[in-house]
Image 1 (cartoon, rainbow, N blue to C red):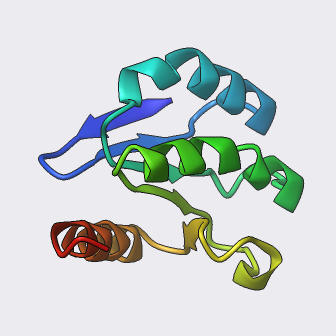
Image 2: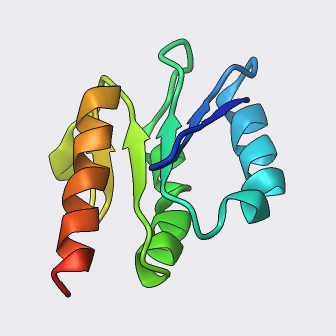
Image 3: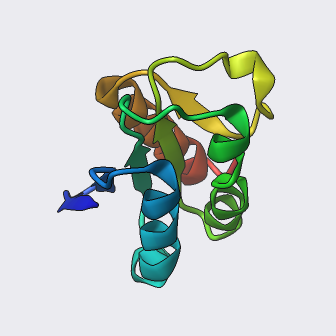
Length: 110
């Protein structure tokens, strides 16, 4: 798991051998990321299912409740298969846009 910190967010890129290893590492390290906007980039080499991606839903809700953003980057996904409140995008640029938009909404009191 590679982690990069910027002023606006923490970007986590999966580099483990399997999705199950990645989610275990993420869960072990999660307390270090509370209170920060997170972008999780799931490797395309994994045979990731919707059920795998939904394992991040509880973390996304935690971040929303704490006033921070949580965005998943995964290229091959059908957005309609997930709740509207779950941010899943295909690229880093779009993930950054989601965080910027949510920051603006929070500043405006939404």
